[in-house]
Amino acid sequence: MELNDAGVVVTGAGNGIGAALARRLAGAGARVVVNDLDAGAAEAVATEIGGIAVPGDAASEAGVTALIAEAGAHLDGIDMYVANAGVGVSGGPEAPEADWDLAWQVNVMAHVRAARELVPGWLERGHGRFLTTVSAAGLLTMLGSAPYSVTKHAALAFGEWMSATYGDRGITVQCVCPLGVRTDLLENSGDSGKAILAGDAITPEEVADAVMAGLADGRFLILPHPQVADYYAARATDTDRWLAGMRRLQAKVFEEEA
Image (tube, rainbow, N blue to C red; front, top):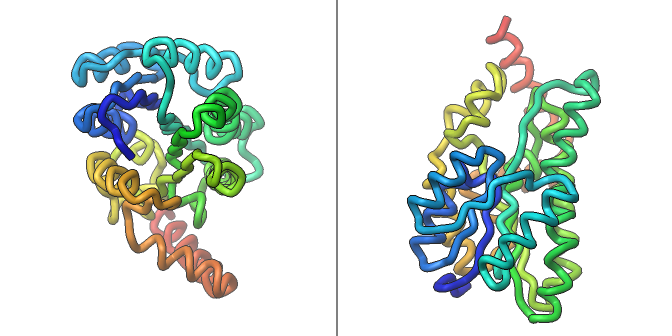
């Protein structure tokens, strides 16, 4: 993808992976709109990279519509939309309805709503790129967090559907699926999350490196942790064995927390 002078929106870009992506994209010549719920953080990153801050909600229907309208006006058209904003909530079926709804709105419907706004124009222009930060949880699972795992699987499924439906009509869809990344999301993942992810955790900048390589070759799955490809293959080819391994990991985590 030619990034020089491209109009790019990055959601959740006030810190972590989003901020790292905004910096790298701007460094490659893109004109970047920095979105985040934290207006101060969005302004700080935008000032640093010479971008434009458009803070606000990137998940609700009204919020997405407003973001894309304002960003599109600033950029004179959006060439790439990076749906990076995400939330992690813990628990299983007992997790509160509000937590399940929050995960669904931010991790899934934010992508659907953005696509609803962007796809008609991209089809008319004949090009557009939709990049989503899914997480390896969308390919595998995340012990201790059913809402996160389920919604990240849904985000991946939506990305697959988008690629299958529009990939031959000029729209490139890509999903970034890292394991642990040293961000606030990892810090807030609790003891089980840290026990599972912290050992292989990488920096947001390393995720950005992988994304830049993925933008260059257009691959659907961008895997900042290459071993995720092996885990994903094992899950698909011998699911029972993979689940047995996950149960052993679950037991080990519980034992360490006890």
